Length: 312
Image (cartoon, rainbow, N blue to C red; front, side):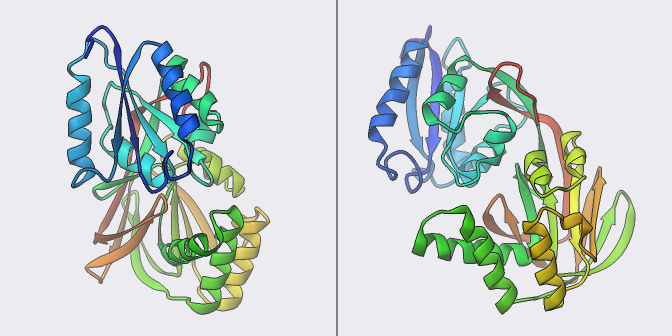
């Protein structure tokens, strides 16, 4: 180890990382780029430790041995980025991103190139920018968190992905499949900035990525941009309403759909008579104890971005 070099730690998931995608040649080019910029590189498989907390402790301990703080790079899709980011809130060490997912909303909103080698240059030569991170109980979400039908969409989408490969079309196809087969409603009480509302809904969606919300043509994208919780509630769960809502979503007119309500807030609490609720967080399914408490940690995560890029 040379303390005068800058530490760079790559964290990836073997199932979705470079080697699984047979990108060994690109992997070698990444090493060449970063070595030329004075980085000493070590690679960590996210599944090599018992949990992400143990892995990140090892990574952070490594960086403390150097004179410079370096960069911790998350290589993967939303799940990998979320796992790494969850352990880096309020750290001075910036997080770099190599986008290997399907939609790559976090990279795109920060103007990080989707080309892996160009993204590697940003890690080496960019600047850290502070991003807002939304929290739900003990978890974070960089893109979105949702209850009701959306977790079912995720499960069905993964089935489609395993059969047909990872394509954006599968997200819509799996959504249609779930609407045809399963339309469960949740009976909840939602507290928005201290005011409680009884809600019977098939779906509540909370977004933190303004690009994703803008692509859905939602005005609450501005709420996410300024560090508020951005929420969408569908108030009716009959099949006709849900099909119309899905159609309006595809057309980018979700807020114009009947029985769809959106809001921005500083804090949200979701109450349920059930002790746990299934929540989809950045594409991963989690069972959480109720009530669900949401807030935003403002400018809590430093991410390497191209110079003069806008922050989340």
